[in-house]
Length: 113
Length: 109
Image (cartoon, rainbow over all chains, first blue to last red; front, side):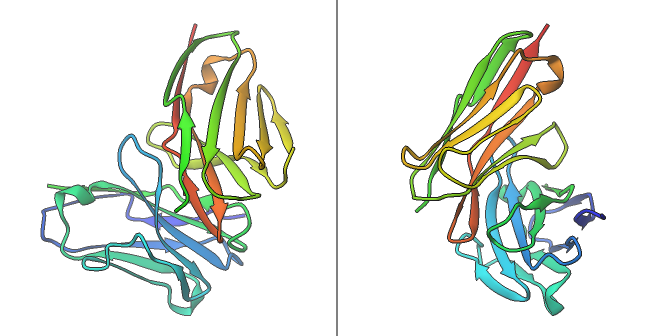
């Protein structure tokens, strides 16, 4: 079974630039999560989708972050404009439902300089 | 708001020793997960605990859940170097999964 795919693996941008991350979940998984993991901390939930609808985006900084999951499969997370404090690993995870085990992708390591 | 607290945050132990990592959470939940993360890697699922009193074991690791006390433990038996990693607990609440800060475990010869 193919795992959660994310790209790119690494990205370095200057502050105030824009960046986008892509995630392809495990086939058949209706629930998709985006997490932000700052070095030395646990993952922080940014947004959760159930199919193509948003379940929870209460911790998403909506003034600069946006996410979509068109057609209920792939998802993109965008930051515009980026700040230094956005430097982190962005993890995508998927599960059959919100109540089942989530599987994580390799993550995208973002460095904002 | 759901809060998940792990302790200790850092743990250095010798090979062959036993130790327990604790995970406390603030809101009623009947689902708890333990993940392992190696440096620079993603998270690997270790255990899924779905009910009060649940106990699961895999090799030298054993996880338990007490939903009344809002506490889960991850017990390490006779530690080996390969267990060195960061261990996270995650609690499911309203279909959200919230993580603790993690316990960075180092096993020394």
